[in-house]
Length: 88
Image (cartoon, rainbow, N blue to C red; front, side):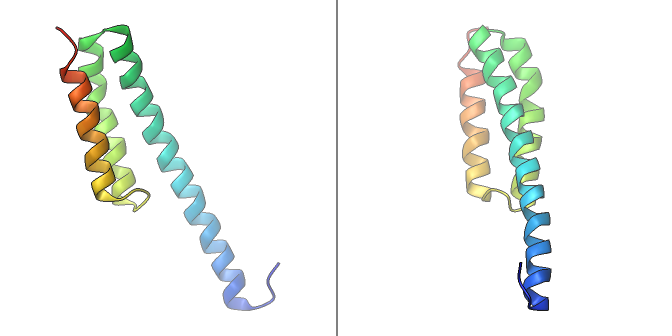
């Protein structure tokens, strides 16, 4: 445990940031997994329905600087490509 005031505050801030980052990443990954599960099942309608929710979760993670904006764009693009590749 640090003795210096600024170090104590820094620890508290780091804990809050870590909690927010874990929450954002978890939400993003769950949304992606739902879309990928629908793709694996071959359910194009369900995958297309879940895609906007996954995009929103990815965008929010990027907005909070949990992931880089280019990483967010890459993840969204990959998901969209997979959804569009499903035969309707």
